[in-house]
Length: 418
Image (cartoon, rainbow, N blue to C red; front, side, top):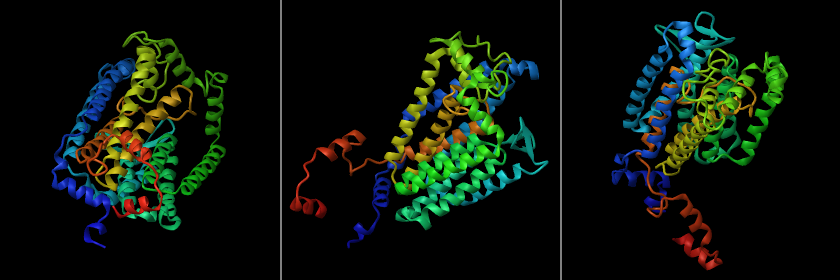
């Protein structure tokens, strides 16, 4: 076997890309435009949705907007730094970062260390601000999973070396999140990890076992905590308890229905006047629906669909397996969270508290989301054409693959030799 043939295809492709100066090409401008649009739109909606709560609570209508702008600035700094730093250099931070995040998730549960609000203990008290470790855990786990699975190669499909350690680590992280409790973030992390595992080459049987185990665990969690059973019943019929367990969902549906096609007008919504719980965080999508109507909510959905498409396109053209897994995890994680938030407020999913990425108020969420986008854009700067310089559009690969004739023995031998 020649020396060139012994080098893995991903490594060869990346080495050739590096020799051509591929890491210096501009980032995906379409992805940059989507991120900038969501960020600017989020700042506008945070002010519109929070103005009543900010004035009645802090006597300053710009209170939440000012803090969100500061978080956006810090997040953009993190994005620009990670855009310039080669994502391969982050491999050394994967394990230490995961250990620190596990420690913070455990510290949140300690009395006097974790801050409690609305029956949940999800924040760490730090001088001058509060940190939500679950947001940091999303990025830390994505980075570690991508680095770890990119070294496994064919061992990913092995039960002992692939599925067992993957499930054990995921159980630890999800277990700590459920103790807070934070079911929404646990579901996002679980779905993101499974997406990375699938992209790494997991066997269909492994995914089936994971899905089965997840369903059994969810059934057990519903029986252990009565409030989860109540949320499930509310999901089936939110109007049965409109002033109790179904209040949040009912108010969100009223806001979405009141908006009609074009909405009542930006800033004119009524549900944010202390009717809709958490209008600037978990329920901001309902405020968008009331003030901007179906057109506004459809535009938000379209932006997240475009974000997922551009992000997965970056994963498709990434120069190596690490880049593909990182881009897949970041794109799927942000998109899953957005879909869950919108699904909850439209009563398409059982209720769970979770923010809308880029748009909802929340410093930890916005900073981590923008930092993740910095890594994604850095990968987009290093993308290379697939199939040795042929057409880079996935549709062309599909057409070229299935239009060629399937020849018998001699033809297959010639192609194998080539």
